[in-house]
Length: 309
Image 1 (cartoon, rainbow, N blue to C red):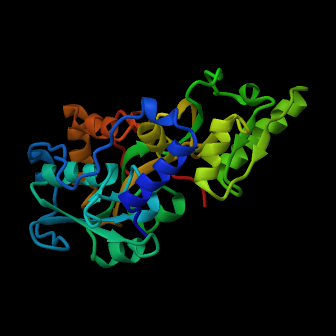
Image 2 (spheres, rainbow, N blue to C red):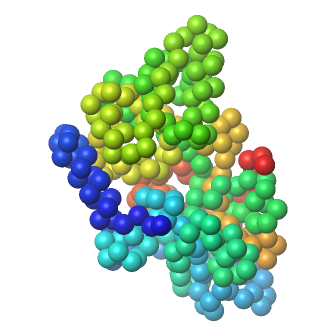
Image 3 (cartoon, one colour):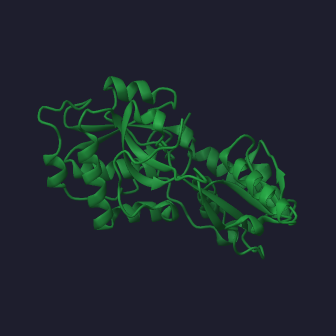
């Protein structure tokens, strides 16, 4: 299900009303369907790599599946309640432009994209898909972002940096149950206890608004979760700031990639398209537009080592 921009605004308003200091440093986020996307010129090298006779899902178009599960700023509906916007759609635009194709973004569920890509219903999925060894058996990947977890604290917090186990000693940290970020904190707590350092207190909230209020009231010291979600919250409310990041596959490397059907030949031109956008600076513009520059990659990789099965 896609996040409606009106619901995002209501959530922001609810938090801001409860703590009116949030709005003072908030940055405007343009949720209009007419906001111009960042474009790149045709990439002739990428176009030349498209297999002869390749049949796109729709002739002349690059059809990309985007799942609303990703959430803002990755994917959400504009304020017309129908146009898909966000960093994933903007990334898809870069690839489509490079391949000399018109972009066709299709809203889909997370459960639908694997069959849709395998059957040729979609040319690719660009929807926060992490490279795993299991997925590599069925799909090809061209990376375009790092999977990043972020530590966020109240904007005026005295906490300036969290990058290692000792930095969380004694802190009250909000984290999702059963997530990889929880595993990180449990491992860091174990290391702290072995070193005679006070562990962090992990806190669990089912409601994001309640979690944000806990941070603003001082009942919690930090949030730890997917960087993209909190980066967006920081942009629209100004109430929190990032003080550290950890790779989402910790202690391994996790990469986010454009996903295509296995061995259909499309991954190489997509990779070349991404490399061109990285070199041209448009890729970085997209990430900065959505507050995701900390997730940038220096180069795109084809089928890198994935997270284990």
